[in-house]
Image (tube, rainbow, N blue to C red; front, side, top):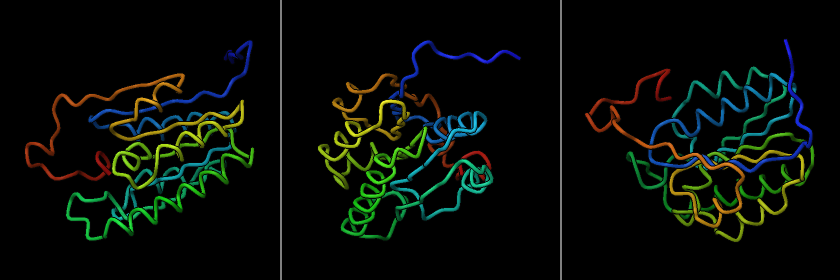
Length: 182
């Protein structure tokens, strides 16, 4: 089997956004791919945390991947009972952890899951997100997921993918299904 090596190694900034299903799944796929190359990966989830998700159990089995679930779920939707101030406090803790992990130089790939939503909801500030992007080491890959990516964030990215919803079971009043939605 042949392995490709780029002529110039470079850390990329990837933004996964849009209103469709699959942004986190795509990011976790990148973590799986990176682990297959024995790369060190850190995933920080900004808003998830109130509902068990199968991918967390799977990804934790990979020795080069660490996951930090920092939030109390999705702020303001699906009956989430926590106050805005609690969500913001958790997002600020996630931001501090993100700074530590990115600046450590210990990771080949850092995934900031739902950071775009956190920014849109004002749980974190644009200046904070841009600071994270600016502090990224040259060879580290940085992935930012979540709906409604800010134009200044997408402008700094090397790759931006928008996941567009065409049809979703939730809109047909079908509850989230184990193994597919969580």
